Length: 323
Image 1 (cartoon, rainbow, N blue to C red):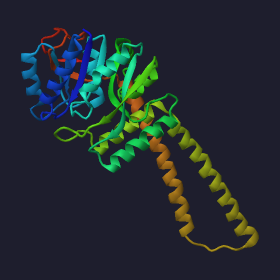
Image 2: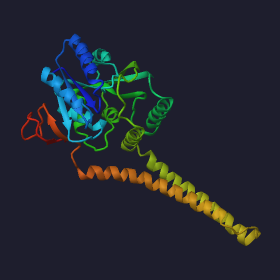
Image 3: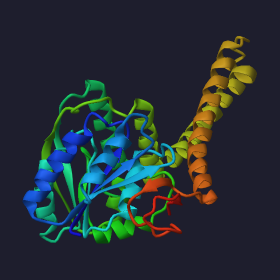
């Protein structure tokens, strides 16, 4: 198998047929052997039924059906875990990332690179708020992490089998795949493109999911928030010490003070707010440590037509857990 195309699916019934047609047209023209790995992440529409129909007609169509919704990054992980291609493409089903770019990405991979990611020149059909928050997040993440995570990129990329095998050795629960791929290293390059508007349906990436992904990226690859909490603690303690000295001076030396609760309440609220922020930051890291310590499987497969290394009856569609 030359290429595995991993496609996470969540309520994408409006786009599946168009995506399949465009992928087949592009990949057939490349004259390579390939498989299309659709990972159904708990869709509530007809996505799974459409994938079953495609699989019954085309043996190159593989599917993985989760027992429930585990999230976009876990769906990508499952597709990579069960893929068999010498290289793998990660692409979303909304057609914002054009399948027609795959030959150029794959050609770059043949030049000796292990990772070729697609970098966005522009983003059509997205609100100004989403563009601004994405821009700020990527640049903030780059500035506070000790690895080089490319800005203005998503998960759309092609990676070699070497990188896929390295990702399998990183079983943390809170996945941030583009950060993990950057951490792995090897030779990496990019291809620029203009991101299109969503073809159909509604995005599954709500602002709450975007915030969660941002937290996973920051806490997974940077200790800067913990350091910021420590520094702010010292800073607030220094200010509190100066205020204490001023209070003692006003009380016993200048005798110029007014008893009241306003300044006291302001001080208490300020100190309490800083403490709560610090505790919240520490809690985020502890929660992620706790999730990894429990060692629950990343995902549970309800049905699939792919061989599963952990299944007692590979390829029959029985339940299986992911590594």
